Length: 404
Image (cartoon, rainbow, N blue to C red; front, side):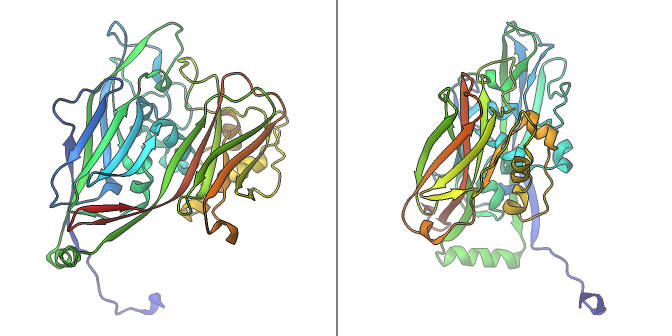
C-alpha cells in the first residue's frame, strides 16, 4: 500500500523543459471580411507542437453601419465562432479535421460537455452560460477580443493530447457570408456589422530534455508511422422540415470506422438570419419521440414518451445529463438545470456507443425518425451532430499523412 511506503523516493518530472505559446499570423495579404479564406501556417518543420493546448485569439469591433457602437446589439453564446462557415486543421497539406458550421457545432457539443465550474472561464471565449441578458463581450466602444481553445472546436484537439513531431501545419478559416446569426439585437431595423482586426493562432512549442529528445529522434530515424486517434464532430442539417407530425431523415451512409458513437439532435424554428432571435438557443417543437436507426438497430430501445406541454421531460434531461460519464468517463456535471434545459437547450442526446455484432462489418446507414404532437412550425430546421471515431497516421521523417 502507498501509505506504508515511507521510504519512497522523490521524482521530479523534467522531461519538458519549455512549453511556451508562440503566435502565428495569417499571410500578410489576407483580409478578414465576409467570404474570405484565412490561412495561418506553421511553416517550420523542426518543431514539437501541442495542438491540444493551442488557441485562437480574435479581436475586432461590433458596430452599426455608420461605424458607431450599437447600444443594444451583442453576440449570442459562442457568437464569434458563428462568424465562420468552416474551419479546418491541416498537417502536411492533408485535412486532419474539418468542422463545417463551427459555431453551431461547438455550441451543441459545448452544451453537453461543459459544467458550471467552467462557466466563468468560458466567458473569455464568448460563452455566457448563465443566459444573463446583460452579459456581453463587447465594451461601450464596440471593441471585443476572445481567446478560444481549439479543443472546443476540433475533436482532434480535444482527444489527441500528444505533441506533433516535425510536421508543417496550417489552420484555415472561412468567413461566413453574413454575420446575422452571431448577433442578437433588441432594436428592430438596426443594421450592424462585425469588423475583425486580428486572428492569431497561439501554438505551444515544446522543448524537451536531452534524454527525451534522443527517444523522439529515434522514432523519426526509424521511419516510424505515428497514430492519432480521435472522435470527429460532423454536423448535418435538414434545412426545412415539412409541416407534419411524423418525420424520417436519412442522414448518411457511414463507413465502418466512422459509424456514430453519439448523435445529438436539436431544432431551430425561425431563428436563422433573424437578428431578434437567439441563434444559440434551441426549440423543442413539441417533440414526443425520437429513434435513431443504424441499419436495423434502434436507439434508444424504449420510446421517450415526452411531453413539453405537461413538463414531462425527465427522460430527455436524463439522456442529456449522462453524456459526460459516457463520453469523458467522469462524473456527470451538466451545465443546465432541467428548467434551463427545457427553455434554452432541449437537445436529444442519443448514446449509440454500444453496438451489436451486426454493425461490425460493412457500411452503416444512419436514419432518424421522430414524432411531434403538433405539426412542425414553418421555417423549422433540424440539426444532427454525429460524433464518430477517426484515425490518422503520419510519418515525421517523410512528412506523409494517411487518413483512414
